[in-house]
Length: 341
Ligand code: UDP
Image (cartoon, rainbow, N blue to C red; front, side, top):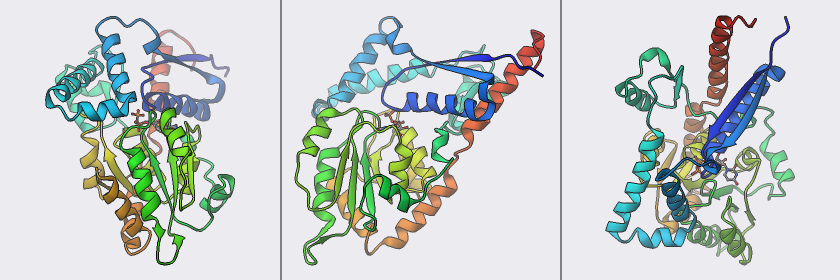
């Protein structure tokens, strides 16, 4: 019978690139699964007045995240590092407060689910599904060769993707330069790989890298709306330990080199990547470049194995599990309010 349109409002803190990407994933999955039955609205609560001290903490941490050099310098002073960690911990505590009255809590891991139980929620309120990733990462997949034509990349050379989440964090400039040197074979006088750098919202980085001369094929890009294409066209990724980018890289079968993590909130993602055999943690730009060069030559088997592990670990359908579960909840409530469903 005729179904009433339901409205979904997603409130998010549009910081970095992760929250928006997750919100878009849920919106797109609703559309694919239920068509016109749902209308989804995204709203950035950061633009609303959420009150002191959260708004100030938010802008303080955003400021530090944006100014990478300052951030790096600050980290050489333990006391400042402690304060910064405190700010991030306070933010995390703010967001990690679980309301015992929610109809449902979706948790990406058993660990978070356990924490919610400690906070007074009961089992029936909690569902453990992986992080919601935009359906474009697993639907309508275009093959690597075609993607490389579309993105005007070299058709043959193995490609490394370098990025640092939505705001372009981590030692990106040093790593780009090291890769530019190491992926050029001096003896044969030719490149053994190509480099894609996605700077996200970090405009300073994009302009400084964009003005350099390179010995190998390099593309420097700003914020890209179609990350699934760039990932699909590359063979490995160097990145900070952001949960969204990790989950996406797994879906695309990209072996991962983590070169940075945001203290506190992203720390636990490092052992997740390393222990599951899908990547390594290397903070040094030179060591990173060395490993990529080996992956593209003598250690190609290791790259292949990690790629297979990544595909096995990936959970591209979690976002559909989430929207279907929300739909069931909406139907139950609908019955109560005697709306046909
Ligand atoms: N992202 C994007 N375009 C860009 C850079 C990043 O769409 O140019 C997306 C990326 O695909 C991922 C998200 O931004 O979905 C980053 O989330 P993550 O959790 O890795 O880190 P955050 O940026 O939130 O710190």
